[in-house]
Amino acid sequence: MPSKTANQTNDTPVQPRLIVFLIYPGVKLLDLAGPLQVFADAARSGGGLPAYRTKVVSLEGGSIPSDTAVALPSAPFASLAAEPIDTLLVIGGTGVFAALQDAQLVEEVRGLATRARRVGSICSGAFLLAAAGLLSGRRAATHWDYCSRLAAYDPDIQVESDSIYVEDSGVWTSAGVTAGIDLALAMVAQDVGRPRAMALARNLVTFMVRPGGQSQFSPVLERQSADAEGRFDALHDWMAANLESDLRVEALADQAGMSPRNFARLYAEHTGQTPAKAVEALRVEAARGLLESTDLAVGQVALRCGFGDDERLRRAFARSLQVSPAAYRERFRDQ
Image (cartoon, rainbow, N blue to C red; front, side, top):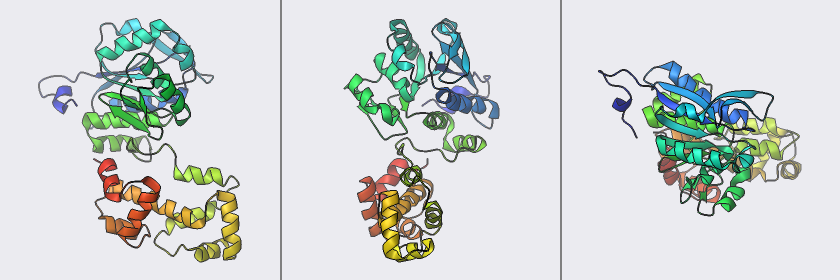
C-alpha cells in the first residue's frame, strides 16, 4: 500500500491519482454512479484525502447506452496512452456478456490492467477481468445471481458467493450495485486510512463502511422479504429496540396482542421461522455490529444484545456464522 508521502510531500505538489472507469454498452448505471461518486467526492473534500481524478472510458469513446434511459459520455481507451493509471475499475451490467465476445476489448482490459497500480470490478464486471486472465487462482466476488456462472466460466477462480467485496493480491471484485460503493470506500481507506474514509461515508450519507467479508444478504431485508405483507414489521422494530429484554414467545405474543399459541403459528407461517430463531438472528446481527465497531469485551457484547452470557453468544455465533465471536472480531474489526 502506498504511503501518504507517495501521494503528497512538503516539497512536491499533489499529483492526482487517476481512477479509470471502464464501460461498454449495457452497463448498469448505478454500478458506475456509486463508486464514481465516492472518488469524485473524495477529490473535492480535501481533509487529508488524496487528490483523485476520474475518467470514464470505453473502447472507442462517445456516448455509451446504459441499462437505463441515460447514455454515458466516455473517452476512448486511446486517450489513456500517456496517462499513468492508479486504479482501473471495470463496471458491471448485463451487457458484459456481449462485451466478452469482443476480443479487442478483452485485450485492452488486459493491457490497461498491467499499467494500473490497482484493478477492480463491480458486479458482473468480474467476467471481463476473468476473460483477461486476471482472476485465475484468485478469490473473487460478484453479484450473488452470477456466482455459479462465474465459477463455471473459470473453475480456477475461487468465487466467494456471499462477500460484499474481495481483495486478492491487488485485484478487487465486488458484489452488485451498492456494493461498488463499499469497494470504493475500502480503496479510499487503503489509501488514507479508515477514519478518513468513514468521514467521506458520512458525507455521502452511507450507513457504514462494511468489511468486505460481510454477507451480501441483509438480515433485515430477508425478514421483510419473507413477511411480504409486513404483518410483523412493527414487532420486529420493537424486538430490535429491546434486545436486552425478555423476548420469549409469551412476551412477543403480548406485544403483538395475540395468544402465545396463535402468535407462534402465525409468525412461522408469515416469516418461515420460529420466533426464537428470529430473536437469535436479531441478537447475532446486533452483536456483529458491536464486535466490528467497539472495544467491548465479548461478555459485555453478550449482555447488551440479550444473550445473558458469552457462552450463549458463542453458541449462537457457531450456529449462525460457524465462527466464534473473537474470530469474527479479528476478521471484521474496524481498523
